[in-house]
Length: 258
Image (tube, rainbow, N blue to C red; front, side, top):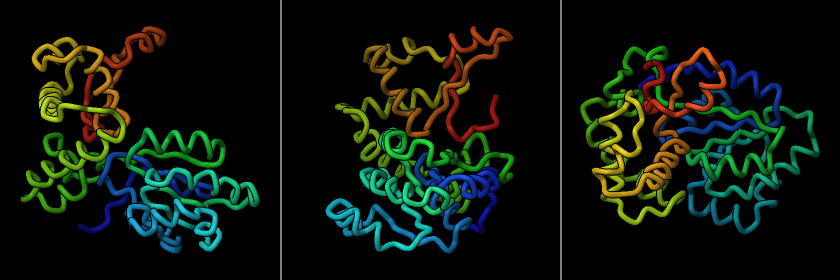
């Protein structure tokens, strides 16, 4: 599939001229790495999913960082969030050097914790979702806009089933202790059947045989990993909008649904 420009590109480039670091988060497989490597082709690329690179980053992070020539792109930074503290010291040595440190990350909860603790005021943060209808007419409300699904539509069923398995095994278990993955799978299917509707946690909990607080925890996991959006209803009274936040549910790919 040829590279399709993303709406966020101009803003990311502008941020790289104004901030020492740029962070791109979002669901897995939305094109975060592709976007950053396209926008910053001269950046050194460090994949932190590589076991050897991970081991070195954990055992001697200072040496790894010192030997790298900037700009540097750290892919999947959530695997070694301790690197952020060392990078902060490098940024503080040269606070006027912009766009030198680039990060991508899929698990937003641990990633954002590291950014908030180590990179406050030093990093511009963006969320990259699957392709929207405004970015390509190949995206759809039914099948979404994940790049690999659009590139190989004939195998999208296998792709989605593999994606769910990876999501369950890696992201969900890294954030919350889900003891019964079979029930969580049923929760995902039930939630998908009710997207775009008023969110009724009790109506979801009852057929699954779990508590309403459990449904709230699971919804939180889906939201922070970029799988769903909780959309507030519209009221002319802004205060009422804030109080009633989160009453309509949309999947993350449906960026233009209403």
